[in-house]
Length: 467
Image 1: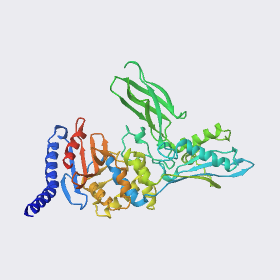
Image 2: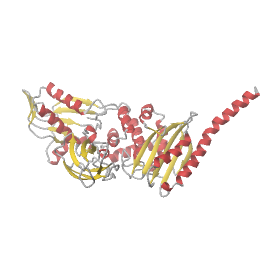
Image 3: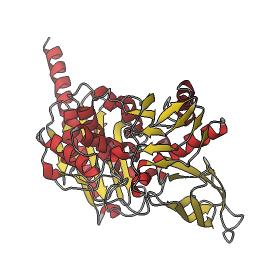
């Protein structure tokens, strides 16, 4: 019996000491990272909490605000779940104005956006063709065979500022820098197919855009890159512009067909696609497609709705958040931030959304000054959040009924459920881990201004001590 009691005591001592030794090893590994040449001029922060109690197990530089990159998406998603609810859905309405007589609509079709970033996305049921066909069916069911008017993309709900202040010019114009729209469409992007020259002296050829965008002029300044240099192509295409400059290089032997570029005016493209579809099906529209913004610039009144004929409902927030975190879609973060502002009774601006988000977590005890939030995606290098504050948000999230959906949406890196974040000279990870003994941790690690490449392996080497 004495031997059995001694054995139980030893096993208990090992189980309780094991987490402590992990943290000691973690501290050593983190100290080694700080001494690494790549971190010589960097600011590196780590915060590890006991996921059950919220107790800080290890922290270093945890109160220094750092650029977060896409780890900010964890806070945006948690705020959206809290304020909007996991079952929240957007609705896009097709309506007409004017009068309908004998099949002729003397008025306009109006596509009224609600800020849904998933409309026409290939990731869900409401794919581009499905949406267009649903609208065509609704138009036919309403008895419309001819339109003496136009198709208006109504994007007023989110205002005219598409990209947050602080975004980098090199990002804007590329698919990951696609701004918001009150009437988003096909994740606000299109593709440009490219063909490199046979040597570096030859120019890159533009084969086509998919879908075709004849209203956008593409200026090709691309150079053929040497084999192995890959995709170094950037599109410079400001919001609401119709001129795109392609700059950089496209390598010989590259294994993809082209690049994805941000739509400069998603609401216009949406109206344009419906106009084009109706034309091909023999339903004439007398005027070119337009948007509420363009009509306002021309000082034209937006016509009042006579009849709603179709409503398209987005997937629930739980599904949107899945792709938001899994694939790190910046557009979703910016759209959710504006929606959060709208839900709180404020105009749907990025600034209002960020303020609402900060106040929400401040009410839960997180220091406002630790949350310097500029956007919803982390693409802005001006975001400054402490690893301690982010860890506290992740701790609070566990208590909510939406947490299983939030946790499910987190990607898996290095055997952990953590969201990654990468922008220029910034690398970060934030999320959850359960070790082999069942101990649960919340981890946030962030390095700003590192040098060289391959830093993630060194961050993982630190986090490996928790396994």
